[in-house]
Amino acid sequence: MYKLHVISRLSLFLGFIISFSACNNATSRREEVVQKKEETQSNEKKSEKTILFFGDSMSAGYGVDQEEAFPALIQDKIDSLELDYKVINGGLSGETSASGLSRIDWFLEDEPTIFILELGGNDGLRGIQLSATKENLQAILDKVKNKYPNTQLMLAGMQIPPNMGEDYTSEFKKIYPELAQNNDLILIPFLLEGVGGNPELNQPDGIHPTIEGHKIVAETVWKHLSPIL
Image (cartoon, rainbow, N blue to C red):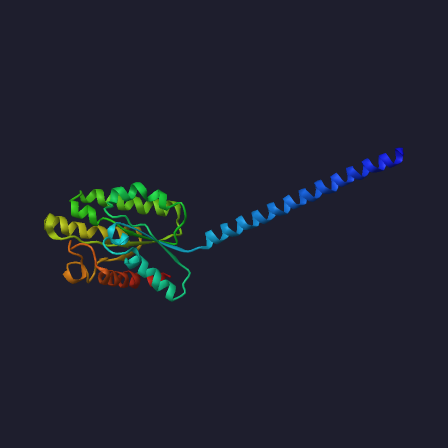
C-alpha cells in the first residue's frame, strides 16, 4: 500500500513537471513567434520608402478632394509604374514657415526617403519679414538633415503677386534658389508654373489650383522628382 501511495505521488509529481515544462515550451514558442513578428514588422517599416510633402494648402489640396491634390496624383503615377514608394501628405492649410517649423518634429518620427518642402507662400501673402521666412525654411531643412542625413531634400519654389511691392516680391522669389544652392538640394523653381495667374486653372480666390490646375502641378513636380526615384 505504501509503495502504491509513493508511486501515485511520484506520478503526480512527474505529471506536474511534464505539464509545467510543456507550458514553458508553449510560452517560449509564443514569445519567439511574437518576437519574429515584431522584427519582421520593424524591418518592413525600415525598408518602406516614403516621400513626404511638407507644406501648406497647396499640398493639402484646399478646395478639392485630397485624392485630387497633386501629392495624391504623384502617388497615382508611382503606383502606375509599380515603384515602391508611399506618398505622405503633410500639408496644412494656412501654414506659415514659422508654424511649419513648430510641427516638423512630429513628422520626423520616421525617416522619409525624400522630403519635399513646400512652404513660404503664406508668409509672402502676409508680408512677413523675408529674413524670418528664409531662416525658418533653413531651420526646417536643418532638422531633416541633422536627423536623417541620407534623406533626399527637395524644395518647391513659390512666387507671390506684386501686392507687397516690387522689391518685396523680387526678394521673396530669390529665397528659394538661394536655399537650394546653400543646401545642395533639388529645386522646383516654381511650383505653380503654368497655373499661377491663370483664372481657368485656379479657384475663385485666384490662389488655389482647381482639379485641372493640380494635374499640371503634379506634372511639374514629377519632372523633378522622377529622376531620383
